[in-house]
Amino acid sequence: MKRPFCTWEDDTLVLNILGTPNAKRDAIGKVKGHQLCVSVTAVPRAGRATDHMVRFLAEEFGVSISDIEVVFGRMNVNKQLRIKAPKRLPSVIGQLDLC
Image (cartoon, rainbow, N blue to C red; front, top):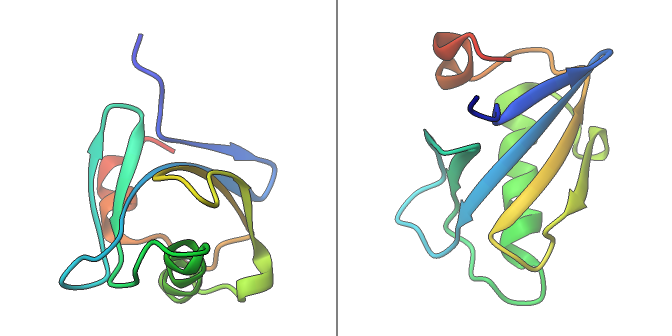
């Protein structure tokens, strides 16, 4: 059975992410294996790309930056994030109906 890229723990969405720094634009992409691809324009230096990704995803999910916790992967492309009480789901997640 395929592992999902996201799960719910009460009102918290847990996302497994494959990050791509130095992209042309910030974007939420397709699901690859058990990870959601997320591209950001920031450089992968001293956690800047992860910080940029958190700001981008906070806007996409309609939450404040403090509502997103980086569980692991701050300095790695493989990440897990916890998003507390997202107000909206980006279309790629809503379309897949996997969470």
